[in-house]
Length: 239
Ligand code: ADE
Image (cartoon, rainbow, N blue to C red):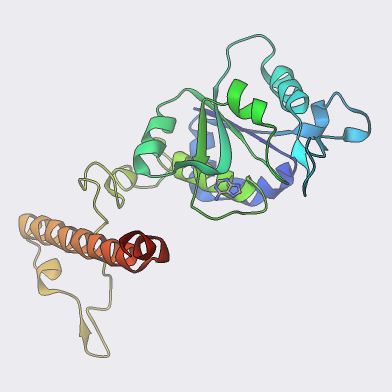
């Protein structure tokens, strides 16, 4: 796949590109390209943002700047699936990651300041993605999260090809969290590795892992239900 990232701080992705799964994915023929909105802005002084109409705090990324960046990268040719990183977008999960990694070409657009002019959302975005219901200073960290999750799903990105397919929340695990892992030593401070994992009985190990995943899924669901019951919003709804 080809993954393009548009940002005001492309250098912040240097670290991501040093990561083994990303390097493996690139060696397999995938591409990660970085674009700086300032390099293609039609405005003088490399300007990219402006004050909001109607007043208010902060600056807004201009629609003509985003248009110019996409035009410079793709011209009038085929456009990738364009994903805006925004705190209010669709929450990133394994299902959405599978959907994006199935695309041949994806572009991630990072916002900064107060975000994008609304016309960017309306006319350029195919998707809006959030990594959580909190506001970060910009889309760079979320884009790194998306890039990481996509890259590790690409064939050859991980040493062991089956690892990503069996990650927590994957289809193989029926959307459940992963089972616990243990390694040597078999006993530390009297804390023992479960006997079944040392038994060499693959069928028993498989059953044990599935059962632990189910237990964790049930515990997470219960924790979520109780967090929801205790949240101030749900309390005011029942008052
Ligand atoms: N930009 C700022 N905060 C964000 C978030 N939580 N998810 C995606 N993009 C963002």
